[in-house]
Length: 229
Image: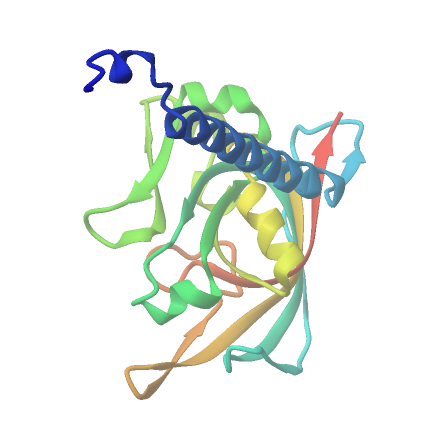
């Protein structure tokens, strides 16, 4: 005899299992994110300072030496370098087609001197040059009073192409965000790498007063410190 109520009384067993699996997956993902964030925080170097205003300009001393990265990129040291300041812009490069993005995955733009004060941002708007030169370049727009109030803006800023020395430094570079105060230490370098079968070389600027193409600093980063008062 056919029991027409069989479907009515049958209890689906797969649906609760699927819901439980989805909840478990979400919990696992949240735990991984929490672990990664905590790992970055625990590995941060933090320093308490008296003031974050009128930060001194970067320190640079000529040096030499070579490093070959595991990726095959050849690094030539040009100068030891330490830059301290306020982060006004960041950009992460995900596209692996550009070989430079593989070993220098992030640009971080830093200001110092009179530009250290966050109040400056009322007069200057920071961003990336996505039209003329591309996102590897810092761009800014000022109001009419900015140059009168702060002087020569271009000598108090630096757009930095970052080369992490190891995985820990890479994670820390990715954790830096706009408005952070940081000290970044390492070397100004030139980097030679394979690009479509040809050797291409990019070289750091060694001056804080140049502008335009070739004015960015290429930093092989060995240490990052977050600053706070």
